[in-house]
Image (cartoon, rainbow, N blue to C red; front, side, top):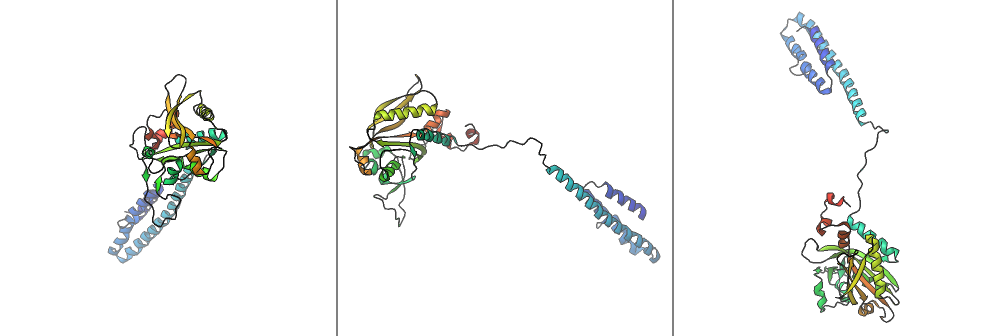
Length: 337
């Protein structure tokens, strides 16, 4: 092929290359190992000296031209590519923004905070306690000694005593707390009445799992101690709590029951209007033995204690049929609340 014709052809190839990939292909077609210009340069050895000198000069000039033209076109394509990239990444501040998906609180957290707010408005203080407890606070301090048959009411997760433990408070046998009542015993040891507290938190019981039971769930414990505190005070507090929590009128009734740490003890039922009664919680007047253990003089103080399941409140408020859904981590379920 004529050198000039090849040069024109190379110019056109460079000109029509619309991106760096096409430009690289054109370079390979002319200056690659088997490129047209490369083949010409290799064929010079077969020419006569006089013709070799002339053709060699023209071929070298074509090679240098092609290299320079390639570099120039490469810079131009890179600039165009960079400009396109900037245009794609350019932010139009006048365009409407995309709404970010907001997170929200777990329904159990919402219920716990709502319950705390209601009780705080009635003068109760929110108190926390450890989830790993000693046998003393979980049972003995609550009038449930080791030989008491009421211990069978709680299916307990006992923990192995760590070696060289320095934790020696009356009874050092460890367990996962079966209720939040140990916090009442701890609080009364260090605070003098009158007092009002609520204790939210996780509790653990070795139970079979089904739609209404788990081995890990949440409770809200309450305690009020003062002069002449009566069952009437308790009923008024709990009825007002349910009214505010469910945001509609409620009726409650007390049924005789038994708990080692209260005397008398009762179960609380609730209903809306004329609907069926629903069992809601256990409660009672604090047992004198619990006051004695805490260092209170029973004849000077009276008080009530109660414990309710936050999971149950959550299921009732949001009409959730299965407690396991609350712990499933299913975002489609949780985003409904």
